[in-house]
Length: 214
Ligand code: BG6
Ligand code: MG
Image 1 (tube, rainbow, N blue to C red):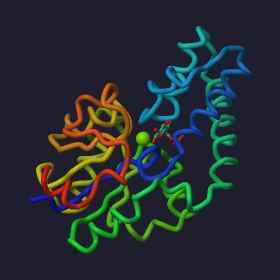
Image 2: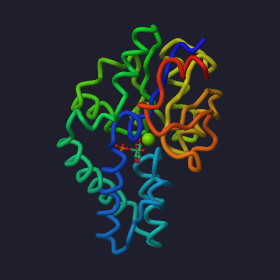
Image 3: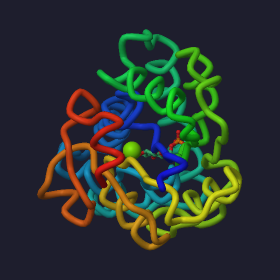
């Protein structure tokens, strides 16, 4: 009964979560405060501007709207420098294998990402052709944990929520999937992603048989 899988991008398909973190950390340092990996959990799955607001809250800073735009642009430029150096081996282990298993079983593949850089990243890694549907930060108006990004993905595949499974590494993303009435596989740690139906450390631990058993 599973006819489509919807994948978050950063931290699920590709190891870009660390680059977002490094770029935010650099911005924090420039603004005069430290930003830890634990703080970073709050930014996963969250849009660029909302992430900046959280970062500023952590640093105890208030800046003008103009300064915010400039800071977000700067962070994105640093992030893009990392992205352009990315190699295909930064696609997370087991992902392409799993995509191929889905293709063999006629299960559709969608992207459901908050990132405005999603298509660029898929292009750089030459994996865009795997996706039947792409929903990203340019096509949604409501951010995770709102289910819009996944609901749009299901609709564009022509499927109901019950026919889709979401793969997420962010707490806000797991919540979004559940809010949309979809099953969700958490990629990461059980403590962070406890709302997911199952949590695995990555796709080396999850195959088409596990999917069918959900
Ligand atoms: C999400 C990431 O996928 O995209 C967040 O988990 C990021 O960390 C968000 O802030 C927006 O990304 P971008 O590329 O549009 O700045
Ligand atoms: Mg993610």
